[in-house]
Image (tube, rainbow, N blue to C red; front, side, top):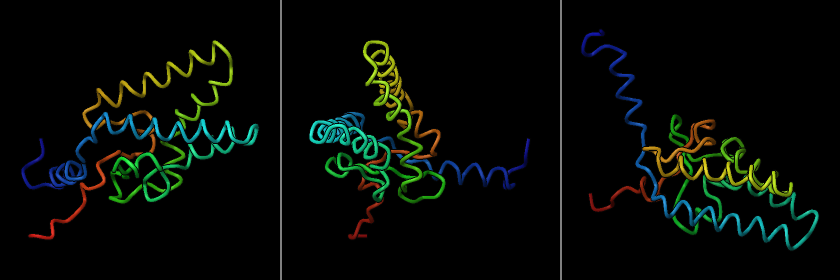
Amino acid sequence: MPERGTFVEEDQRKDTALLYHKATVLNRFIAKILDFLIVLGLGAIAPPYGFWAGLWYLLVADGFSGQSIGKRLIGLQTWVSGLHTSAGFKDSIIRNMPMAMGYLLWQIPYLGWLGTLAIFSIEALLIIGNDRGLRIGDELAHTQVVNENIFDIDSRA
């Protein structure tokens, strides 16, 4: 057991200081639905290129200052936990890979639809059940979705 005041205890305090409050589950679902509507709209407007534009949007959407269009409208932001910065394009691509896999599987009738349903169900259950609301992509990219105003400084202080 390390003694009090050692480096191990300081590192543990730093790690817990970087944990953020879980964003509201309903807000996350609404933001994701808005993003999927954009993806589906791109696919319907300009087939077959719209499919690829939708896939591109799905992957890089959170790279714009940590906010996709859906997150921006709802007031959420994707944050890199260890760096204390908003997510970039690399983080967005990594965290949205499971959703992109579901989008690709959706193109395969029946079996692909079941795969998509499985992926989206697991992701939804992780958002609900995880104490920080982390899904598989968040674990891979070390990101977390938080309320946008969590970092606002109170000007009355």
